[in-house]
Structure formats: structure tokens, C-alpha cells
Length: 112
Image 1: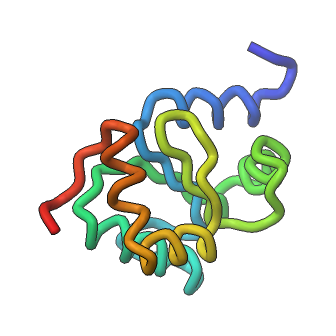
Image 2: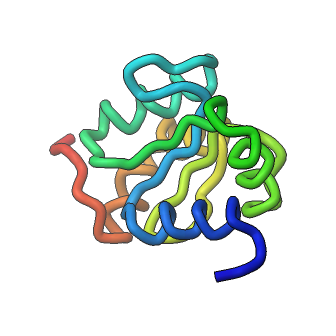
């Protein structure tokens, strides 16, 4: 535990979910196009993932940016590792790299 509760909560979620998405809104109701795009990709790949709505908590919204040293949301973590935001996830998906990356990390994906 650190003296930063938001950091501790983020780390706990990242550590306890093989795939964790910090986003605006929820997977059922994304609140921005970038979050919606990442949700769409993860759902298309059939990935089981956790999510957290940064709009519901200001400490989380700022905390996740500090945690990753990445200025934008959404943010995707796989097996505790920060992968990137919408542009990176989209690019990896379009190049056909995301499925392989997830599989290499031991994450189940739907058959191609």
C-alpha cells in the first residue's frame, strides 16, 4: 500500500484482471468514441476483460493518467502491463497484431 489510495485501487484492478480497460462510461454504454472503439475491438476478439468508468470518480480519472504516465483515456492493461490507448489498440488490431499479443500473454480470444 502506498499513501495514494487511487494508485492502490488502480494497481489492485490491474493486478486482478488479466485484461483491464479504464474507460469513459461502461462497455454497455461507452461515453466517448475512443472508449467505444476499444470496447468494440475487445468484444470482437471475444476477450474477457474488466473495466472501470473514470467518469464516475475524479480521483480515478486523474489517478490513471498519473499511474501510466499516459495523458488520455481509454487505457488498456494486459497481465499488469500498460498496452496503450485507443490509437495503439486500433493500430495493433488493424495490423493483426493484437490477437497474437493477447494469445502470447495467455489471454483467451475467440477463434479468428
